[in-house]
Image (cartoon, rainbow, N blue to C red; front, side, top):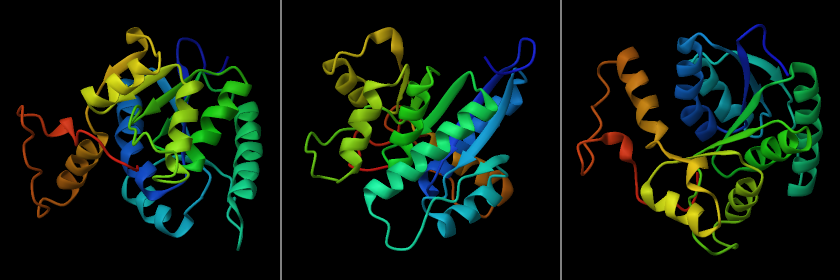
Length: 215
């Protein structure tokens, strides 16, 4: 598959502001590791809100699918994202596709990778309300994403337990904390006037909330 020599290519898919914020630390860590080539693909599901985050976190965008059109419905957004992501995967041949959260971009990124037999990593995996209508379509997106994910990065033990109940093997789940805290720390380094995050109950601000209805 992709990459040169021992290096591996990570394709990181973003489409909304929360995805850019929460995946920026993953991009930065992969860049610092030295063993990865990072390819950021943006669907621009929420272009105006996404632009500022791409610039703030200095994300190296390789592909902009620019899928949004006026008055699109969910089926049209899904079709445009899935087709565009298929093309991006074919062009860049990643070794792994990384998605985050519960958006239409998240699900399409995971599904496109699955169709191309590329492993999927899901950041913020396992959050559930157990009600498909709340929130809609986010609860559906994250449940379906879990079905095609190979590496589940759960923010909390509760999210991990949700995945276990759905039959995901322990060796495919990692409890990582909330990457939004890492994004905040990046911002603090850029702007020291920003208030420090509060410590979590076990002294780790990366623990994040026990549950969240939407990413």
